[in-house]
Length: 575
Image (cartoon, rainbow, N blue to C red):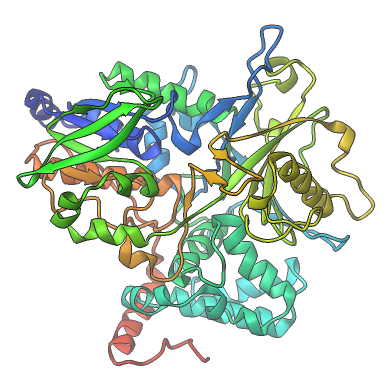
C-alpha cells in the first residue's frame, strides 16, 4: 500500500497544512513518510545529529583510514522478523539504487538460531526456515498443533516428556483463548506463572521462560504479560513463522540487513523524504508541548547543546518520541485534557544495550542469532559480516584489520556477572566489555572448540547514550519499553482528546503490542490516519496489517468467548 488516488492526493496537497513531527526515529520517519505522500508539509525535529533513533548506525570515532568508512557501531543489532508487514511495506517504498523493491531488497535471511549453553553443555541449533509447504486447510487442528510442538521440543531440547507436553498444552490454551480472555485474564498473568515455570526443571525455565522474555525483549518472565509473550513471540514469531502463515510475502522467520543500518536503510530513507519536501531540524531537544484553549498551540524546543529556547508552530503535531522522553514534555494542562497521558507514567522501560566487538578474523558462529541461555546478563548476538554480501568488511571499514563485527546485546543489567560479581550497572564500561566477552566465551567456547579468541579482539563500541557507568548514577538515554502484566491497560491510543495532537511510538497501543520497529511503524500509520480524520482529508488512509489470525482457530475462540462470559476456564485449560 501507499499509492494514493489522484483525487485524494490533490485534496491533501491543496490544503497546505503543516505538521510538526517530534522525533526522528522509526515512528517519526514513518509518520513523515505517510504524511508527505499525502501532500502535507512536514518538519521533523530530532534530538541527535542523525536520524533513525535507536535504529541508526553510529561511527566509531577515529577509526577509518585509507579511504575506508569508520567502523560501524549501533545501539544494538536490528532484526526484521517475517511477521513484520507494516514496516516492510514502508521499506519497499524507499528507493535504493539497483533494487526493484527499494531498501526491502537489502534484507537477508538468517537460517538458524543458536541457543548456547554454558559450561560445556550441548548447544541447540534451531532451524529458522519457514515451512515450504504450509499446513493445508483442515490440518491446523489443536491436536495437529500439539503434535508439532511436541515434535520440535522432543527433537531440539532435553525437556522431560511431561514438561514438554504441559507446555504444548499451555500454548493450546493461549491459541484458543478469545480476545476478551487474553485482555481480561492473560494480560494480568505473568508468563512464568502461565507456564508454571517455577514448578519445572531448570532446562524448562531457561529455554521457555527466560530465553523467550529476558533475552528477547528485555523483560522478566516472572512479570512479563502472558498475552504479549504468547501472542507475539510464541505465536507470530515462532509458531506461525515456522508454518509460513501470516508472513511478509515469502519471508523467512528472521531477517537482517546486508550493511550497517543507516547505510542500508536510514540514509536512503532520509534522502527519499527530503525529495518529498520533508525538512529535518537536527540537534534539537523538545522541551514542552504547549496546550491552550483546547488545542496544542506550539512546542518549545531548544538546541541540544543548551541554546536559546524557541517555540515552533504547525497545524498538527505528532509526538514520536520514546515514552520516557515524550511524557516529560506533557505539562499539567495537556495531561488534564486526556487521562491517557497520565496513564503513560505507569509504563516501564529498561536497559537493553549492545556492545560491538571488532575481530581480526571472520567469526560467524551461526548463520543467524546467538542466544546465550545461561548468561547472567541475558546475552544475545550475531556475526554481522556474513550477511553483508555487498561489502568486504576489512576493505570498506576501519583501518583494514577488522574482518568481523560481532554485535551483542545485554538485556539483564541487574544480576551479578561471572568475572567481577557485579551487575552491569555497577561496572565500568571496560568491566562490562570484559564481562560480556567472558559470558560469550562461556557459551560458545565448548564442546572441544574455541570460537572466540582473546587475541582476535581488536576493539569495541557502546552507544554513548549510556553514561556514568561505574559511578553512583549510571544512565541510559535510550531505554526500551518492557511489558509487565497490565501494560496493555496503560498504553495510549494514537488519537488523543486534543484534536491536533497525535501519538506515535512503540509504546502506543497497536495490534503488534510489543516494543518493536513494527510497532513503531504501525503506530505512525494509526497517528496519520487519526490526523487525516481530524482534518477531514480525502486522502487514502494508511493500510494497517494486523497479526495473523488462523481462521481454523476462530470457532474455538468463539466457544471460549461464551465460556469466558460465563466465568468458565478455556476448554484446554486443565490446570
